[in-house]
Length: 324
Length: 245
Ligand SMILES: Cc1cc2nc3c(=O)[nH]c(=O)nc-3n(C[C@H](O)[C@H](O)[C@H](O)COP(=O)(O)OP(=O)(O)OC[C@H]3O[C@@H](n4cnc5c(N)ncnc54)[C@H](O)[C@@H]3O)c2cc1C
Image (cartoon, rainbow over all chains, first blue to last red; front, side):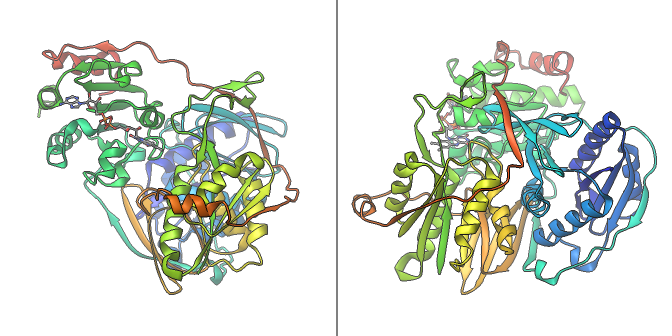
């Protein structure tokens, strides 16, 4: 009755979320005295698969077939559901990533399993009962959910659980699923990656800017600051609505929810909808010329001043600190 | 093209979120309800696709009679007809089952939902409907183009985007970027009153999960202000105190 985890890769390399879900499942497995089996779909090298043992997987099921080289929601869901059944797992853990959000509900529906999405913490498990804390109301609140089905599914929020190395080796096994051609009704045509950029939902540091920047031509200094910090860039909604930045950078209640270690908000007022998506950041820094800006009420550190003056100085100071 | 748009009735985005009954129920007192903002994007896209006689748009909501105002707004935005499954929406599993059961024999070409609702944020409904109807689903679509029976969808992925194609029928969860939200005009508001709104009774669905209680985030401490002339100090605070750089 092991715990099954689905681990995502990008071009054959595991994503950060893969290590998060394995570490998370390992902690649960230790509590209930079972083991962790991971399932990987796609062309991942054998040694990369075996390395999941370091995070606590004792076995990795490897599905590597030409047809599955790129993500097909329906087919991946069928394969993972089949693996849940064939391993007899009662708990499936995956990441609440963009792909995870498409997969988890399909798998849960196939298995008639209760699904907890946007999970933030380890679950409490006693006998057959599992309760777990998840986000609700766009991060304005949390809910404790009880899953009452026989098989249960947890989709873990990115950045919510620390990656832990526990040592050990994973045995890699080929898993050959029953493939239904009807599951291939979507086809990936193209993948466009901003390779030099840190992915926003997974980023540990986020540098975000708002309408206070006045226009898209001023984003150079934001990117420079993000570069120095190895951070992802983000923006407020009016900024992406105006086309100054792509929609994929818009954070908040109707954008991406982020929970980095450090969130730097530059020229953003801190409207309730913006705060909803960023308030679970561990440390918040606000730079705004208006001392009454609501963002200061939730910030840990703040500078009252003009962004055009402060940001270049901050970048300089960080360069000096990092010795660049 | 026959399009079904799933709309949910959610607390306005400016709502302060509080709970009653020992933190077991959402406190609706003084809360204004609106169409879920992502569903408004889905609806706007559907209206755009159906424009000029190219299709019909039906909106569906699982809710009690209190959601009728939200449904009328959707009709005012441009949907042709509406269906309300007469039940308090218990959770995504329940809602998706009701919608799939309704849609099953009606041959919709496209079923649109918002990417997630802003109350429970599950992003589940689109994918569960897809599974229950055995048709493909795309969650978190940033762009949708339909050419005869082929749909091209841009989907968000970490650090980029994926472009995929699918044949109709298809379920799509739409996000910002898919369409500009449409604002109802006077004619829309007037005609919404006379458009059909069917009320259908729900069927029972097995309970797989339930919410035990809610909590609100602990208040954060007070801000430590650093003088604008001493930004270096911020760098040391982030290093020594917050330990984030
Ligand atoms: C349905 C709905 C959903 C929404 N969802 C979201 C969401 O998900 N995310 C989101 O961000 N917003 C969202 N909003 C919008 C939100 O209400 C605010 O309008 C938005 O967050 C404000 O963005 P802003 O702070 O960049 O701009 P503004 O409100 O214009 O604030 C700009 C700030 O910059 C400061 N500033 C200006 N110039 C300078 C300078 N030179 N130096 C320093 N500071 C300066 C100002 O003091 C001000 O505080 C939503 C709104 C609605 C109605």
